[in-house]
Length: 140
Image (cartoon, rainbow, N blue to C red):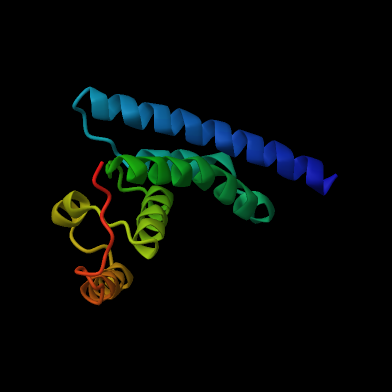
């Protein structure tokens, strides 16, 4: 019974998040100011019982996290929503750890944190250690 209740809660949370995201994107495209505070108030009114709150919050945050990750792939950062920021940051860190750093993102948003800064230093050091004279070139 608990598993069924949790699935219902997750479904409702994801649906509410999708409605909020749709509204947020609409506000952004219409040049209006998006306010996450009204979304938080609606979330708080939606589920008051502590026994279901964590399940609801996690399920609600998942669509925002996914949107943040997708936006990071495009080099965008649009919303000041904690789960969105977390997804965005995680994707940027994943890029940095495999050697991809986007200068435009760095210039626009600054260093995300010390981890990316250190990763940049490590990558630069590795590149400096390459023997460019001995490298084979593709003449195509």
